[in-house]
Length: 184
Image 1: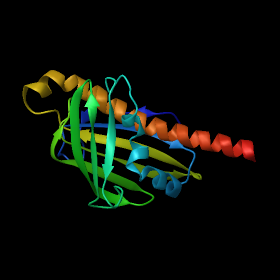
Image 2: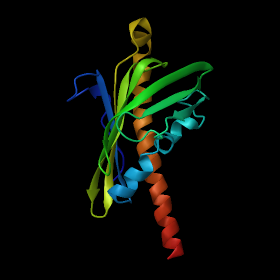
Image 3: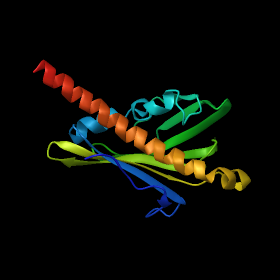
Image 4: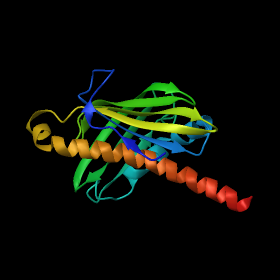
């Protein structure tokens, strides 16, 4: 199964955010191993730490609490530069079901360029010894005139973010499976 992206769309069930994007991939790992890997925010957000076109040549660094961003109430900080502009945000984990799902949301006043507040996470469904991974983000545009001006970029960024996360994980576990096959 390849990547399936459904965003941006009006946010569904939660009704709190205006937009929603999701990317779904099949991963060669059981649900527990996949969750353990994704439970580290630095692994999940590895695409944010690399310089890229979508990051306008910038990158982000993570600051994790004593629980390393694991469990309800754990905090995750991110800061860096995008296109030379300093950005920073604080997130808190609000859903934590090992082997199944995890989600976190921004708190405080995030300093972002193309998204306002958001909630992001992943869900895992076991399938024949492997897993289906759905990475999602629900977001609001930046308030005011900046949001109106940059709203299109928010949708592109959200789509890139969920696709990069999902595909990066899929590639990592494909690499692991290939390495295991070579050693067998």
